[in-house]
Length: 410
Ligand code: NIG
Ligand code: FE
Image (cartoon, rainbow, N blue to C red):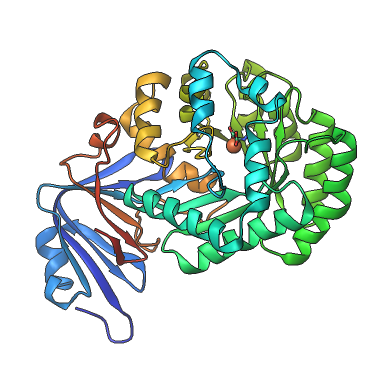
C-alpha cells in the first residue's frame, strides 16, 4: 500500500536476515525478512510475506531481492581525513623499514607533505580525489562519513578544504559531516604557540563566518599540540559554535582524554595509550571513545584496549581514520581488526560502526539503527549473515547500498 501523499521508494525483500540495532546496543535479527522505506525513512521491517503485501516490490521505485543475503544499517564512519592530494605510499615502505611516524613528520614528511600537495591542488583536483574516495566508501557500505580539514594549515586553504567538503556533501550520495582541524600539525618553520594564536584569532573566526564546520578537532600529541594549546583551540572553536573533538593518546599519553572529558567533547579518538582514569573519565562525562584500529595496524603499534572500555560500559565507536597514513576506506576492515586485534565480538563491531558512530557525530537519535522512522540507509551483503563483515577480512562483503531509500550502489 503505497500511501497517498507519501513516497514508497524501496523494499528489500526475502533477506536471510535483517539486522537492526536496539536499545542498549543489542541486535534485532529478523529472518526471512523485508524492509520497506517510505519518504526516505524505514517504514516497516518484518517477515517478507506481510511486509511485501503492504509494500509490493512491483510498486517500489527500487526493489531489491536479497534472497540468501544479510541486510544491515549503512556504516557511519566517524573519523577520517579523506580529503587530500599527493601520494605517501613510500612512507608505508619507510615505516616497514622501521622509521617512526614522528621521524617522518619531523623530516617534513607525513602531514606536512600532504599540506604541500593540498596547497598546490586546485578545487577540482581536490573534489575529484574526494569523490573517488567517497565512491569507494559507499561501495563498502558507508552511508555517512565525517571528514576533517587540516591539510591546509593556513586560513585560505583550510576554508578551501571545508568548501570542497561541503560541495562533496551536496553532490555525493554519502552524507558528509565537516570538521575543522586547523590544529592538525604545526606548519613548517612556525612556533607552535604562535600558530595556535593564528588558529584561534584568525582561522576559527573565518571558519565560523563561512559556517560549514560542525566540529573542531585538534591533534593533542607529544611534539604536536600540548594539552594547554589544545584547550585554547577547542575553547575558541566552541565559542564560535563548533563542538570539540580530540585526537588523544595516539602516539603517547599526554592527557588529551581528560581534556575531552573536561570540555564535554563529543568524542575522544585513538586512545591507544588511554589509562584506567581516562576510561573512567570518558564514561562519566559521556564522551564517545572512537577507536581506529587501522591506524594501529598501519603503524605497527599496540591496539587500543577496547575490552577495558566495553567493560566500563563505554559506547565504543570504530572508524577507518582513512588518511595517507592509514590507507583504508573500509569499515569492514576496521571491523575485522576490531574483532581479531581488539577482542570485540562481531556484534560489538557492528554496533560500533553504526549506532555508536552516529553518537560520535551527534547525529539524531536512532541514526545507524534501522529502527522505524530512521533514515533508510541500508547495506545488503553478498553473504548470509552480518558476521561476514568482519569474518571476510580483506574483502568487501557489501553488495548493494541504499541511501534514504534510494539504491545508490549495486
Ligand atoms: O588520525 N593523527 C593525526 N592525524 C591522522 C594522520 C594524518 C596523516 O598522517 O596525514 C590520524 O592518524
Ligand atoms: Fe585522525
